[in-house]
Length: 517
Image (tube, rainbow, N blue to C red; front, side, top):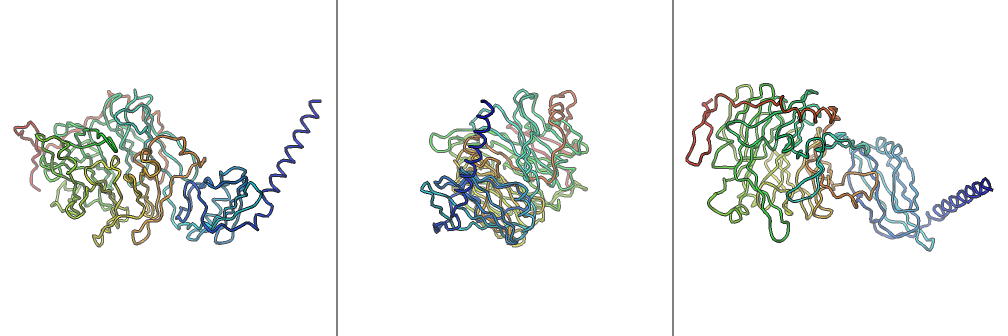
């Protein structure tokens, strides 16, 4: 009896499947043309995609009982996805074959939806372009809850952009809940990486240099604060950092968080000999220097700078009018010598505060963030991305911005892609978005990080923070990094450049005095 019931269930299932397939196939080619594009989520339409990106699954936000998506490449490849639900899950092999055989060309998506009265509707064709150039295979980011002043679970993760696999680089659970931040790579190379640890086993920098891990205390007699925003010199032997005295305050309405610096300077850290150096031009008490970045040829250090706040005036009265300028200064690592400061772009010209400069690896473009004030644009809803052509000096707001926070960004190693952090979905949680960069510096329509489940973001309430593109996988194991972080006794203590002398002023601060070179 049980055997008969089992076979009956199998037969009914086969009949039901055939009925579904017949209904899904019946008459869809005679569908009624709607005359508009379909609403899909994420919005993967009219975009430029890398030829090595994971399948870009999506939801069809149109009412119906059956769904069909027909994918076709310019060269003629074609496959279909049929679904009884509005989720379009794309077969990986067919997707990759279509992309690879249509590099530099277009692919098309035709969406059909069968209404509950069995009638099919066809929407206007979606056309997307496939770039010639790949994007770097891995994306590294921090995941953190969008809280105000507290954190619980924090981790640095890497995602393979050719698929959906995510793995932990380092999580804070074995580190007594330490805060992990400021991961950075030398020329998109995962084998040269640093990240910072705050609290937990103690504040320090974790360095992975070609598989050799070290824990470094970056504080010296000059900088009582540890190193913060990092920038690798192209030679891989030198890092520029800001050292910041950071404070928070809270607004009564709107975005209630805000971050400001009471003071900040820039230092250089030599990886081979653990030495910290600086000069008065990038570390003066009269100004706050922050957000360093190197030119790809290593000859210039770019950074942002604003006048130091007056401690005798309430911060709320002055910080909203604090605007940062963009400077650069020549530096010769061999001679350890500095040139003269050069103002690249002034807030008096832009009317906005300039932060987060990053130069494309080919040296052509400088991408930066601007907001109405301050140097922490992730909390500014009005922050947007801007592009400067370093050949002509002209700059403009890029088309990829939204009406919400668009901020931290990084370049691919081939200078053809950018990734940036955007809160455009809900104004609270940031997600990574990608753009293709044309020869002119114009950006394509941005698209969000593809997920295996296209409804992923509806239930995932964490922020993707500091997205960085790398062309290789981080191979050092999380256990090794954690062991290095916990091995306090083997902490490398940074030493101050002996050429730097100090004198104290009445306020107790110190000013570096360097020999002329």
